[in-house]
Amino acid sequence: MHKNWIAGEWVGSSNVQKNLNPSNLNDVVGEYVRASAEQVETAIEAAQHAWPAWSLSTPQQRFDALDAIGSEILARKNELGELLAREEGKTLPEAIGEAARAGQIFKFFAGETLRTGGESLPSVRPGLQVEISREPLGVVGIITPWNFPIAIPAWKIAPALAYGNCVVFKPADLVPGSAWALAEIISRSGLPAGVFNLVMGRGSVVGAAMVEDPRINAITFTGSVGTGRNLLNQAAERQKKVQLELGGKNPLVVLSDADMETALDVAIQGAFYSTGQRCTASSRIIVEQGIYDLFTQELAKRTAALRVGDALKPETQIGPVADESQLEQDLDYVRIGQEEGAALLCGGERVERDTPGYYFTPAVLANATNDMRSSREEIFGPVASVIKADDYDHALALANDTEFGLSSGICTTSLKHASHFKRHIQAGMVMVNVPTAGVDYHVPFGGRKGSSYGPREQGRYAQEFFTIVKTAYTKA
Image 1 (tube, rainbow, N blue to C red):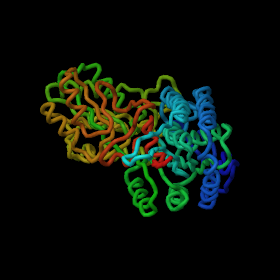
Image 2 (image 1 turned 135 degrees about the vertical axis):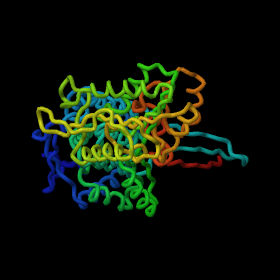
Image 3 (image 1 turned 180 degrees about the horizontal axis):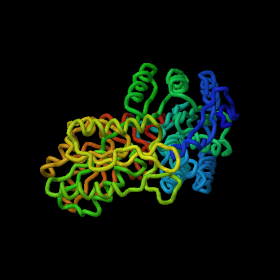
Image 4 (image 1 turned 120 degrees about the vertical axis):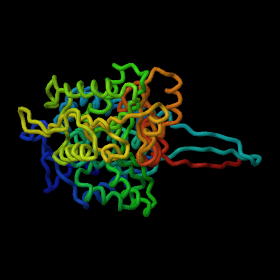
C-alpha cells in the first residue's frame, strides 16, 4: 500500500485505487491511497508551519537536499524508468530518459540555490542605497499531468524547494506510481517535516482543496485547457499567483528545399513518439505543395511501419495510449477528420497484442485543412494532420492560425526562411530541423496565446514564478 507523505509521515486512507499497466491490464503496478480533503488541509498546515524556517535556510542546506535527490534518481534511472513505462505506457528507452532528466533537473536547481542573485543600485536621492532581492513565495501547490509523470513534477518541485518554498504536490490520479517513487526519494533527502508533502487523489477533491485554501500562495498547473482556465478563475478570486501550461496544436512546416530524410525523421518523432501524448507534439504538419504528395506518401509508409506494442519490449517503438478514455478520444478524432474530408492514409485503429492493453496505430490524415476540428483541437494522441501550403508565406500564416502557441518547427535548408520563421512564428519555442517535442532542462519552457499563462518554467527563468521581488532602501 503506497501512502501519502504529509508532515514528515506516511499517511494512509481507506480510499485506494489500483494503478494498471496500459500495456497489460492484468498487471497491477501498485495500490495507492487517495487523500481526503481533510488530509490535504493537514498537508497545507504542515507546509505553512515549516515555511518560516525553510524560507531562511541556507543555500547549502537546500543544495545538499536537492543534490541528494538528483543523485539518487540518476542512480536508479533504469528502475524508475521501468516503473514509468509500466504505468504510463511510453517505451522503456523514453521512460529511462525521462527519469534521467528528472535527476538532471534536481541537480541543476541544486546549483541554482547558490546563484540566487540580486542588485544593488544607487538611489536618485542622495545618501540612499537601493537593494533588490528575491524571496520565496510561501506554500506552493503543484498539480501535474499524467504524460510526464516524473519529469514535470521534477521541474516544478525542484525550483520551488530551491528558492525556499514549501510544497504540496498533487500528481495526476492516473499515474501515481512515479510520483510516489519521487516522493519516497525526497522523503529521505533531509528536508524538514512539512517542507514537502505528497497528496495523491482526484482533482475534484485534492485539487479543489488546494485552490480554495488561502494558505497556498501560488499554484503551478500543467494539464488540460478547460481545467487550467477554471483553476485560473478560482485562484484569481483568492489572489493566488498562478502558472499554467496547457494545450498545444503545434505546427511543423516542411518547405520544398528541406532535406527529405531529416524532415521525415523530424515529423515522425515529433508527431508519434511518446505515443503522441506530448503537449509539444507536431500534430499539424504543413507541407509546401511542391513536395506535398511525395512527402505525405513517404510519411504514411514509414508511419505504418512503426512497431506498436508493449512498452517494455525492446522492439516496440510506439507504446499504448494511457487509458480507455484517451483511446476513445483518438478514435473519435480520426473519425471526425474523415467526416470533415481528410483522407486516412494509415493507422487510426485499435489493435490487439499478446496482452490486453490500449494499443492504437499512429494515424496520418492527408488532404487536411486548417479549419477542420482535427486540425484545430488538441487530440493528445498519435494523430497527425498533413496540410498543403502554397508557399512559405502561406505556410507561416497557417502555422500561426491557431489559438495555441507552445512549440513550432520548420524543416528547411534556407537560412533566410529559418531566420524569418524564428522571428515571426507565434510560439514560445521554435525548432529548426529538429522535432518540436524535444527540449533541454536548463532553458525556459513555455508558450503564448492559449498554451501558457504566467512566467516560464525550467532554467533560471523559473525564479520568476517561484520568488517575489523585494526592494529595500537604506540611509547610512
